[in-house]
Image (tube, rainbow, N blue to C red; front, side, top):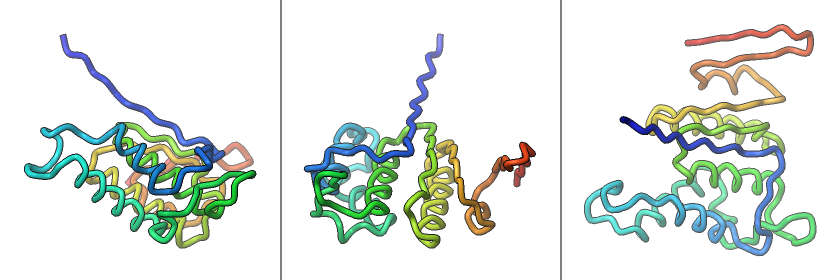
Length: 165
């Protein structure tokens, strides 16, 4: 008998974090829960080196390296901006190594170039890691859909378009 375990994770519309942790602490916590064992890492790479490398990669990929030592914050604790907080949520999702990732309006609060970078990074994750990603985008541009392999568009008139490449 073969047992199949699929990890699915959902990123909600609202970004909920522990406000008093820094961006690095938040991501290190997420990474500490999902760092692979010795057989899942390159030979000679320690757990700490792996976490540090992945943390720096996520921070650079989402352009939040400058916020590493800033509190995440919330409506009561001053911290990173709303767009930066959204990118912290995205980085947490990417750190999980889940098989299926679901993003609900993850481009909210992001400028156009950052939203495009987000979509491109999702495409890289699907190609390199073999993950399946579901994304809802409420503001759609042609540039955002180009990196995607398959997309479904629902218009207010209830028309649905499916495009597969």
